[in-house]
Length: 606
Image (cartoon, rainbow, N blue to C red):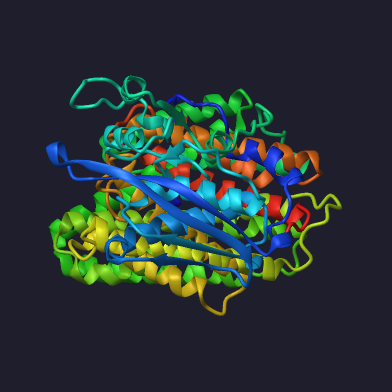
């Protein structure tokens, strides 16, 4: 997800209502579920199966319970039919528990979330509805009758695209529901039988099909509560972080210029980075720091990756694969050592201010991700079959080295510049972070099961597709190791984001080849990907604005999100989704950071 991991914005269509906007309504006003020992809700979740004439759909009335406890979640698969959908329900419910708890502002170590289901589900498309149920149960809200929903849920609360919407709309009508919430990216899907889009199909059946973009809008529709508008723009960077933004932007533009000046790569490899350089230089001259840094970073990473890939492919063809394998093995070991050294030096937040410490796991993502990918590459190099595969792996390694040696120090500098501001945060940040680590690990594990058992991603096939599986194994070990709380939390985030991106990439965006050591490719569903980028940015803007009003310095997530979006927006001259993947990675880390800061500054509600 970082560099080559997971998600580019071409001005997407956005529906009203960001998940972070809902926080301004929910956090101050609702009582603790602990007052009654727990809250329980029944959530009507749409499902569909089959295709064509054999397609069918229905409603699964999932029972969601949230109460006091030691943290974690469980799923009760009540009969054999539900057991058959075990991995799908597990993925949906784990993501729902993680996202809803993150958004709620409640310390996850105090919550136990349980789900009881009796019927069917067609994959993570139940995640958004279940997340509504969890958030409503935490806050003691009542769900309105006659409303149902379908859609996946992303780490930032975005409701993702799903399939078989027309079948699900018919199922809702057959079961007496009058409002169906669908992902905004599915709003223009057409019914094969009638040719109507799903909104018009709903009208013909007496059902309002309402597109929603995120969890905030979905909660408002289910509960009837309004969403309070948040700021339209993020808070300005405070002077110390702005100074870091200026210096790192100037350095990144200069770095790309210098790299192009000495590059011996082919003109095809140099072409896009040269275009990026011109755009970044113009942005820097105009004082647009985020544009300059984001566009230059995209160009520089492309140059590093593609130059290494081209040179290694040529070397393998000239001197044979065995010589190149040995060199790549040494390079992978070198990147692992560099990442380990950086983690050892900076992975302990004991000496940092409270606000910097809670920002550190996201920044460390550059290192945890690079460390895992480098080890994964080392594991598959011996089985790489040809020059092209070795070239792809070399490009991946070059990108990870760039992240360890440049992007991590830039991120660290921004985190260290954050202003403490006298804001009272959690009294025990180590335990606070560990609570989130456990929650996020459960979601990552569930995604892994779903990918392996349901999507059948073929992770044990060609060498270049094995790296994601090995990388997640490395991250899982690190997340559950004796490392510092900051490193464990960072590894858990990287693990969750890799798996969430692979699920979303395949199901929501049509990126079948998304993986580590492979080309990103062009998304089949560009609008869905664009909308996800924009919504994540809006989520961070709203949450950061709320935090800023309390005196919390949100400079790191605001800066990271801004340059990530700039990298995506500047990448309009290629069909591949490299820029979007880079952007969504930054946005997911940034969104979760604002959620952590919100919970750390909120009154203890449980």
